Length: 142
Image 1 (spheres, one colour):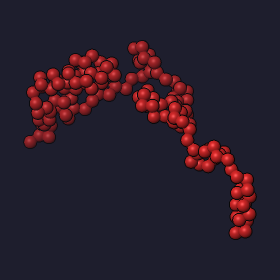
Image 2 (cartoon, helix red, strand yellow; image 1 turned 180 degrees about the horizontal axis):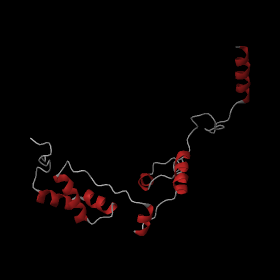
Image 3 (tube, helix red, strand yellow; image 1 turned 45 degrees about the horizontal axis):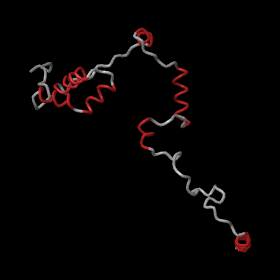
Image 4 (tube, rainbow, N blue to C red; image 1 turned 135 degrees about the vertical axis):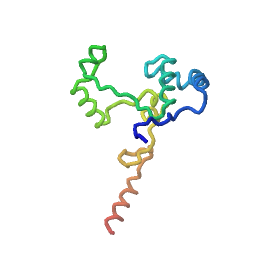
């Protein structure tokens, strides 16, 4: 009745060979492996490792900047991070590449009428000066 007794692993309900073959063929798995900089086979094995034991926690390594530099990684300085956060707060960061591909940007669309009323004559219609004068007279009687 020890509390230290290992629990049975919660994992795959199908044979691992079947799941491995599906993952190796899957386009999303290939895309993810590429985006994280791993070989497809190594990424699939890592996924299977966690799929076989759902209670397994991922390992996190906290590494100093010096260790990262020694391994060839560039780390941002405190000033770089501060500049990035300031730009983000001001809304000065550009949109990502996927958003640009969507062509959902008002910069590319034709300008429509002003919805705030701050544009001078947005529809291109001429304003009748006599009508404006009459509106002024009637509003002052109120």
